[in-house]
Amino acid sequence: MPLIQIKVFEGALTEEKKTEMIARVTEVVAEIEARPYPKEKLQPYTWCVIEEVPAANWGIGGAPSSLELLKALLES
Image (cartoon, rainbow, N blue to C red; front, top):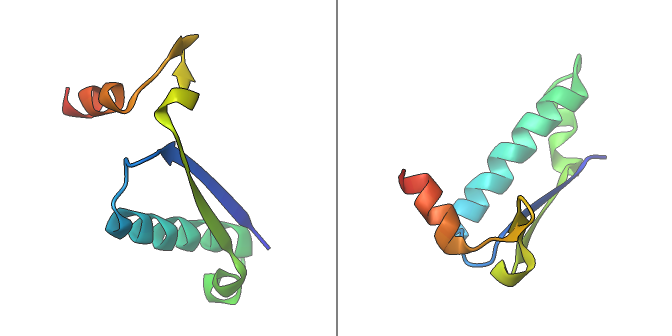
């Protein structure tokens, strides 16, 4: 049974986005892993966990990162 672990900045996703992410990622993983069988056989047994990590615990390129940096990248 697949276990999907997703880590995001704390506060980066609304509840609506988390719900959508869980549904869509679960569908894709089940579709790929179940082949050649239908994804519907595996989808109910596919776990997905979204872990919100405090911004102070993120780093990129050897430097601390932040939610503001993520937002700036998305807006550029």
